Image (cartoon, rainbow, N blue to C red; front, side, top):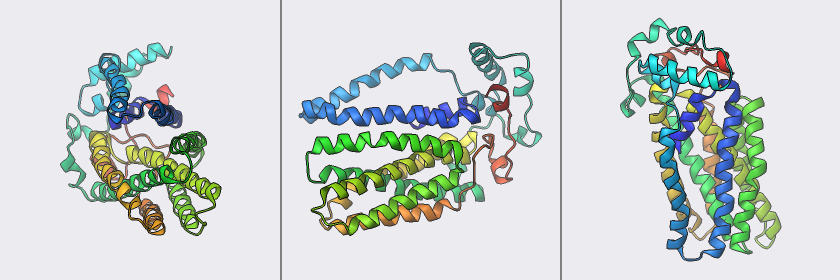
Length: 327
């Protein structure tokens, strides 16, 4: 999932990113919506696992259909292949191809020493700014995943039909998806992330004081918390992909994803503590912690994606300017 996300971001021009985000999340929302519907008719978990796993076989064919990221190709010095891919894309979009070679070969002098260098996980900790952003991102992803999946688990335990509650929870992501796209289009990245975390934390705090017999109010607040946590998750993905340069973008998202999986893994245990307000308070607190930590990440809206570590360390926002030509 992470590789697909990074691949699409690197293939897209800056102005198209919000729409790409929307398309990616439509697939997630669709899967989330159909899962409880399938589970309603397939109660045996092994059969359910088999049914939901089979479609992944189709993705093997994508290897021969998807082009390599031109940005990554340029970063590792494979300019000829990058020119070939960009020319193919330009022709498909009926755009001029005459200046592609000159654009690809126009690489900053400061980044020449880093071309043909393939970053690793160790590079996430070698330089001060990248190291700081890596640590913050890891903690933020942990908090985001823990809160989002914790709220999802809790919704499944609310009074009423389990399958209906999960379907309503999934359907609620539709307005959440619209909010995500609007946020990516019209608001700064940090503002969108911080606001989403703040709404999540505050909604969960209010949730604590709602009597348990008020099922409608509880479900409403839980879904509001879920929508805002979902929005935070999407915006965090986007912000992280823009903060880190191309040579370590996949590594950064992969490292952060490890912490996200840990957060999601322990969420059910927090839900099962047995004291409802304690569980909700944990989710709320982590959302607010994530909001505070997000203040220390750089703003990335409308910048050209950075390619090398030195560009991030030197606060350079100038990179290989492919986007203006193909937006």
